[in-house]
Length: 447
Image 1 (spheres, helix red, strand yellow):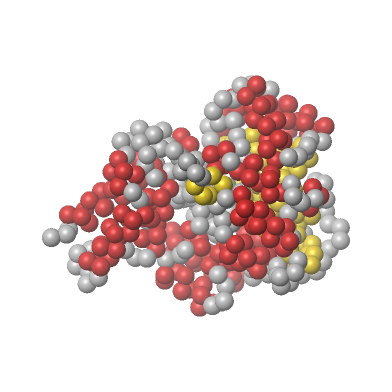
Image 2 (spheres, one colour; image 1 turned 180 degrees about the vertical axis):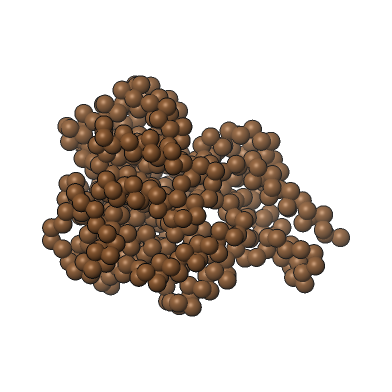
């Protein structure tokens, strides 16, 4: 395996390649009927897999209520989305035993099993956050085979390692013998590629990647987008350019999560969005974020949690006839990132790891509403502004509509249970109290 520069990548990215040695070199195949251009593929140097640059993140399948009022996956819609994705050439599907309160693997397995097994790659994870005994961890691993209706995993990940450094890794995977067990499973072929997903700070990443000498990781999944490239937000996050460079040095294929930063980069503040729309009025805001990530040659696939068909179709459009960004466009994205960094949004990606709150608070919903109001300019308004009353009333009215009273921020007692589960290391109680204080200030201004 060898390192490939972005400059060399740009030279070859427009040329179809039949056999390539470095992850990131482009291979384009005709897209299915109904889409224009050709789906972009990347070749995994470890085993020759031709993986669609657009991958399907299965953490956000659409949900409906059953007869008892319980939230369940809308299987019919999932089947339709998977069918359309495979038709367009998408072939990488990423899930976990803990996604959607344990429902994602089964829903994904049902949808995928309706297609030939060689038409898709399955990626799932050992998400042993709670019971990390060898018995429970192996049971989780084996149950994933049943849920996904398969006898092998193409890509298997140690889930969300990094936080707590090597000591935490040792407790979850070494002391219980699980990493040795998974290495044997890789040798047996039941795991074709073994890697990990990372959340944490730079020193923790350095510890995890140092284990490559011992375990020979096949790939690594990181959070990467044009905000996190040089402006990672959070007490314990690390800039993605550092992660990318370290993985590129080792010629390790990279799977990208959160290319839209939990959807935030698809809904930009008006003045920021105007900058991109002036450059290309026909391009969606999301397409800029996806093109940024796909412009780096070590990227194997970019995961997108496409809940709705319109999201899937827009992404198919971006990744068929894919155009890597020019240096000028990359500079534009840095300008956008600097502007975004000035907005006091909460770095919540909507992963729902903090849920359920023991006191019923809708943590992701509160943060999503707050970020939307920031983007619309409704946050930070002063009583001296001519539009203050209008902005205030809009904030309070939409807050009450979006978040039921019993699930609002004022119910947070600061227990901190949510903090330990947050991959973004957000000080959740602090942010909830800050938002609640702002809401109370707005309420008091009503005379």
